[in-house]
Length: 150
Image 1 (cartoon, helix red, strand yellow):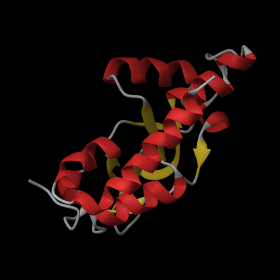
Image 2 (image 1 turned 30 degrees about the vertical axis):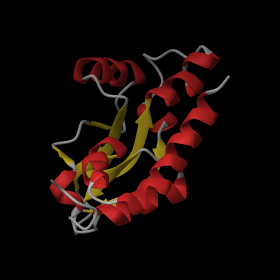
Image 3 (image 1 turned 45 degrees about the vertical axis):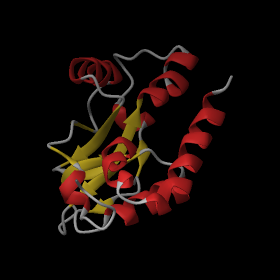
Image 4 (image 1 turned 90 degrees about the horizontal axis):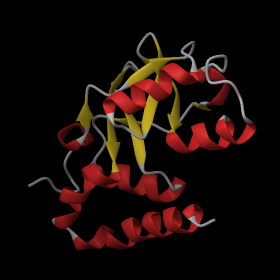
């Protein structure tokens, strides 16, 4: 069973779903549906440029009745997202998620190329081995619940 001292690369999801900056929002939405994911990393030459979540689609496209065939991913992505190096520990990833209220982080190699994604779900098995991080995970979940209330 993984633990919080393990490297991010041990628990991350390899081969992450990504899309280029010039893709349309419609192409992105179709990819998200096909792959059954709630977020996609935006890359150029396999380097992380941004991230887009299903919430971004709702708040930046649907809410303003924008045409998904015309809007480019680069127009709505969160630019320069916080990333983790694959050699950071799971504890480092959890701390970063807690500090910034994030549920997932792109994972990069030393040359900044995308190699994976680590999520709160990925960290859950490592968390079982150590109770000291429960407060961080609860803070993230509580922030998600509060932000989801309408």
